[in-house]
Image (cartoon, rainbow, N blue to C red; front, top):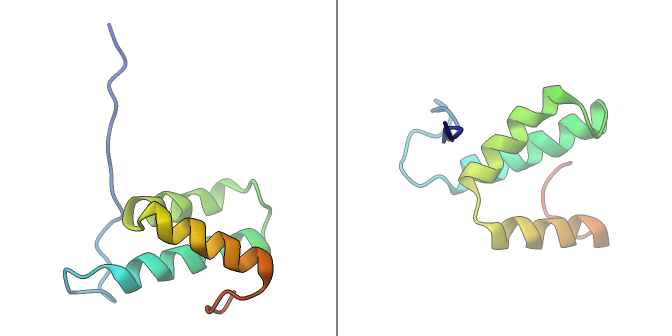
Length: 78
């Protein structure tokens, strides 16, 4: 029998009540990187934030933000 793939997205967050999830995406991305900074890069505690931002954010945005973090020009508070 083949393994079933279970697809999930980030849970609803009362801070983002509208259907436009741009800020929700950005916030989850920041929460993930704050978590990895405060804990360990491979911490399982941070993995949920990674799942959330990966489910919400377009890949192009994440690529751009990763480049900005590497060059020190990321606009958000990390």
